[in-house]
Image (tube, rainbow, N blue to C red):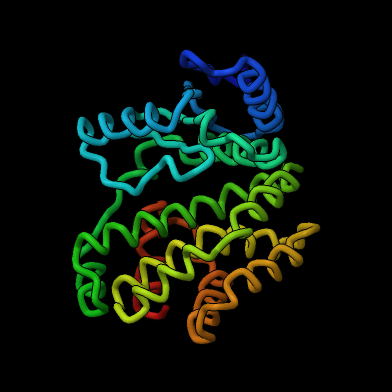
Length: 281
């Protein structure tokens, strides 16, 4: 399998993975790679397909322990990406995809390839916690472990926004509509969690950061007038209608605010976003 430019693509298939899934992943990955026009594509991209969630989780535990990585539970996603070793990696789990329609899996693969192309270096997976950010966080109920979690979740949302907007621009936004529809189709667990933690200022901000994972990409598609984006935004409003009006308004304002990227690194933009979310939820 090969993409344009000079990117070396490696697909690692673990024992027990069905060949039709491998073929589909290769096809969907190429749908993105054949369209990309990045000035500096990654030299190497590794896609690993695992048979079971248990094996994927074991891999992540070992990687995190060896590299000192602190993140959430990656196996909750349909597919994942990282660059912890200095090059982009994508992980897909056959068991996790059981019963998921092909159009949604296609959207997930497109999405992760987009991350590999845009966020394929360590810069996007290591976070800076300035004295100012820590001070603001403490004043709003977030100790350092909670701040780490909040910034991690916010980084996911910010990167997702960038990827979804780019995929829309190159003609693959249809797959992201399918993926986002799936992600917001069931929010009952989030509603239950919100009822438990909404009284805690720190935990509330972590929850709001997690809700932005779908809202920021949807808002990006809406802002550029992508077909199907407004109905998707309406569905998001319905899915999260249980949130209090104040929080809904705050999330909407945050999603419509876009930090000026000129002259700023990803870390700069992420800190700016974190300060805004924490101080003005």
